[in-house]
Length: 113
Image (cartoon, rainbow, N blue to C red):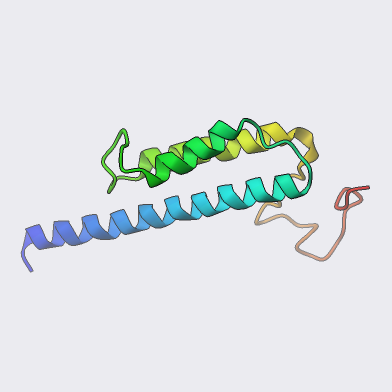
């Protein structure tokens, strides 16, 4: 295998990984908006959500489509907007190394009134 083929292989694998991350963020954004709407919480301006979805789907981007870094940034900004719009009504995310919930202990703030 010559060096050009190796470079192309590495670039293809990197593009696949970045695309997977971007698609995962898109799914997370859609689920977050759906969950907020079901809970009756504000989701922020609709154009932010739909703009992020369209930016990911449409081929017109700031960077060429094999480089999904700009798409990831737009999706992360939309997720942050959803979180900000819901304000303090959202529970804080459980840290992966958090102690209390992973050990089976409950917190008084775990359940909404």
